[in-house]
Structure formats: structure tokens, C-alpha cells
Image 1 (tube, helix red, strand yellow):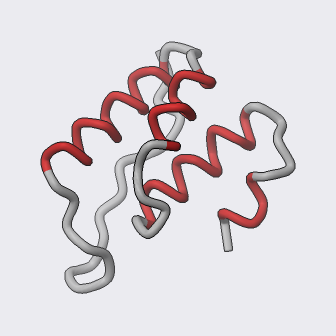
Image 2: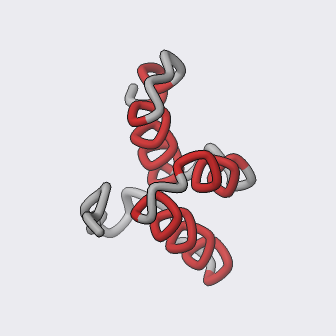
Length: 76
């Protein structure tokens, strides 16, 4: 399938380093989204802290793909 979001590389010091569990959850959410399982991907992301920029970005992208108006504030 097509990747719904590109891999990002943050500059050092910009975002906190993800734990291995958080990286696993993000990868799982990405795989679910790539398979078209957007609601499952969103549910996985909902369990992660919104303080992580990568979580907010991916959640916003999934919400946008689902047609939700809740996506816009997450991009800010």
C-alpha cells in the first residue's frame, strides 16, 4: 500500500525522543493506516500523549482522511 505519511526527521533538541514503546505504537498506527484501517490507527494514536508532536501530526492526518473537522486544531 501507499504510505499515508512520510517519515520525518526532527532536528536535535526540537522534540523529545520517543521511547521504544511509543515508536512501536506509532509504527503500528502507521501500518494500520496504510492498510486502510483508519479508525484502528486513530484508536492507537488516542492512547498516546498529545504532548508528542509526531502523535499530533499523525492523528491530524488520520482525522483529515476520515473527514473530521477535529483535524484542523491539531495542525496548529
